[in-house]
Length: 460
Image (cartoon, rainbow, N blue to C red; front, side, top):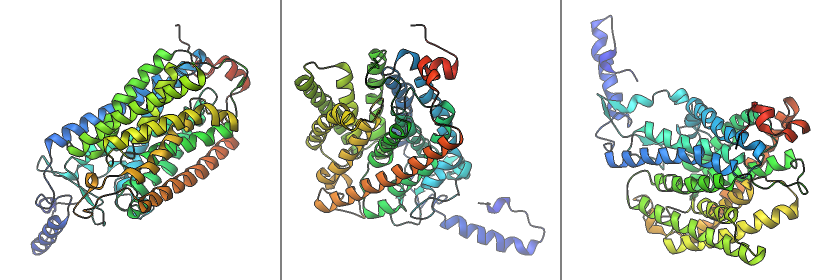
């Protein structure tokens, strides 16, 4: 917006009128009105900066190492490359269009274009001082923030980055790198961005229904899991699936990656409180409890049915618990978090070890078995266990409370996400396959993606 002091007029008689109009606009625009917006809170900002950094750590190096440790030696570098490249690519996509289409005001279905290329991001700086911005200004669910918009944008960018990277676990060891890049860009804009707008923008239609998704059960995990399942079905099995040795190359990498993911998840969940407050503290507690419960549940299931508890099993269980608590973290109490974790650990064990083999799809690193199934469970159980006072506001003094009605709302959000993501992902994959091909050749797959796609190999 043009400020009065910057306007140059050639006729003195127009100056008072233009200055008056500009002053009026300045006084009623929430983004600029210091007296209409809360001041920037340095404590909240410091916590959100920290959360942003550790959520970024979840993708690189966390997810990169977690996935790389579970593939064969000849595909380790290619798997690391996927996470690192997507961090670069999706950061640009988010900066250019993703943030604007998700969070700037538009319709109930998609955001607007006011923040393309982060245009106007600096408008919340007035005379060298940050002024808090209003998310969804002018909508019924508008939220006044106490952090700079730049920090909020970057925090949300880390979510946009990790989601397509999670999908890579399903097509590991067989997808062309070029096709992966194109698919991820289109998927981010056509699947992630609309669903994030529906759920997290105050103007979104699922938000209007009352959907509870604290940190990404639908937006991140169900989206990634369903897309991963579609990728596995469209691409088909890896060469040698079912009879060759496809065991992980280095579980040390995997457990280091899982540990980094666990630590980073505190930023993922507690950071979604938007500041350093009691809700963030409770989200940290529930995150830890659910992860621990799910890790123990998977370990016990494996001990009972497979005779030995494994490293791969316990870290997969803990990740499943972290996935399931993501939509619930800011809505449930610790006892409920433990129940969510125990249920999820057992169910994800079944989906990753039995369901996958029963149905015959090759979800290489269990993107669907852990993220899809865990995300669905977490979203639904949020509707059962939500504790109202945790989310109570002036607009909704009862908060989001577990009930049959809330469970139905959660189920609707889950169903819509599965349908939209499944259909669009399938269409994108088929279009890319028809134009540039999805899969590497049999010879390239046999040689390994490290050499055939990137001309490098590890020397361990």
